Length: 401
Ligand SMILES: Cc1ncc(COP(=O)(O)O)c(C=O)c1O
Image (tube, rainbow, N blue to C red):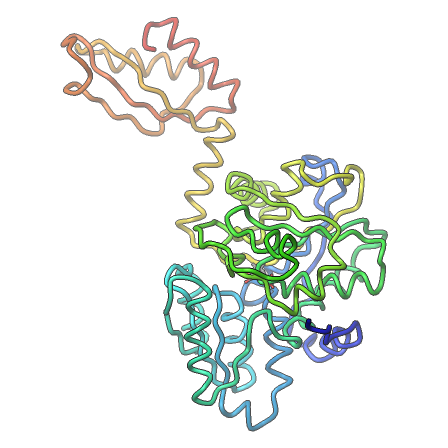
C-alpha cells in the first residue's frame, strides 16, 4: 500500500515555482455550452499553454526539482505526446537535454513539434506501456526518468490547474476532468478538495481506454486492453499507483464516453467556442452533453479543457462525421433515366429544395439489369435532419428514390 506523498502545500509550492513560465490560462464562462447543456459552463483553457496542454505544469515542476548534476545528465520520458512536449519545451528553456519515447501511433503533430523543440525523439512500441519499457531502459544509461503521472512532482505540478480554477471561478459546484494515467485528476482533486470539499470532482474516460473504471473495480490499477481512440492522450492502459491512492477518496463520479460523443464534443468546441481541442480534452464536454452526469442542471461546472494537439487530418474527419451526425451532410443513392438530361433533372430537384451537391458519382455499368436506368450516389449539404427529410420526400415523389 502506497502512502500519499503530496499535500496541498506541495501543490502551492509547485505553483510558486512554475507560475512565471506557465500561462495562467483563462477560465471563461461559455454561454453557448451553457445553453446546450443546461449547466453554467466554464472552460479552463489549458490548450492555450505554449505546447498546447496542461502537461507543461508537471513537466516544469519536475525539471526544476532536479539538482545540477541530474540536470546535466538530462531526462527521459515515455509519453503519448503531451508530456513529451512539455518536457521538450521546458527542458529547452532550462538547458536540460530531453529524450522522449513515443509509441508508433502517436499523432504526427506531437512528434514533429517535439523534434522542433529540440528533444531527441525515439518512436518505439505499439502503445504507451511498450514505449515506457524503452524509456526505462534508456534511463539506465544516466538520464533521470520523469514519468508522466507516477511522479509526485508531476502530480503537484498538474494540481496547480486546480488552484487556478478556484481563483478564477467562484461558487463552483463541480469540475469535470479527463483521466489517463491519473496525474491530472490526482493533483487537481487534491488541491480542490483540500480547499473546498463540497466541489464535486467528476472523472471522465473513454470507453476505449477504461483503466479508471478497471482500477476502481479491482481496487488497484490494472492493465486494460489496447484500443484505438480519438482520446489518444488518455490511452495509458493503466492508472498510476500514486495517482490512484490520491484520487480514490476524492472522485465523486466516474463517467465513460464513447467515440461518437467525443467527436461531437470536438465539433461543438470548434463551432460554438472557436476552440480547437484534442480528443482527450473533449471528454468532459462529451460527458456533460451525453446527459450521463447526474445533478448538474443549473449548477456551475468547470470543464478541464486540457489539450489542443490534434492532427488536422483527424480534425477534418471529426468535422465531417459530426456534420453527418447533425444532418448537415446527407447521402443517398438515386435512380435516374440513362438518357441525356437524366442527371440534370435530379440536380434540379436537389437544387429546388435548397440542398447543395457536395459529391456525385454516376454509375451506368453496375446499376442493375435495366439499361434505361443509372444509379447516382449523391452527397449533399443540408441544413439539418428535417431538411434532409424534406429533400428525401421530394426525391421519392419525383421517383428518384
Ligand atoms: C490532453 C490530455 N488530457 C488528459 C490527459 C490525461 O492526463 P493524466 O495521464 O495525468 O491522467 C493527457 C495525458 O497525456 C492529455 O494529454
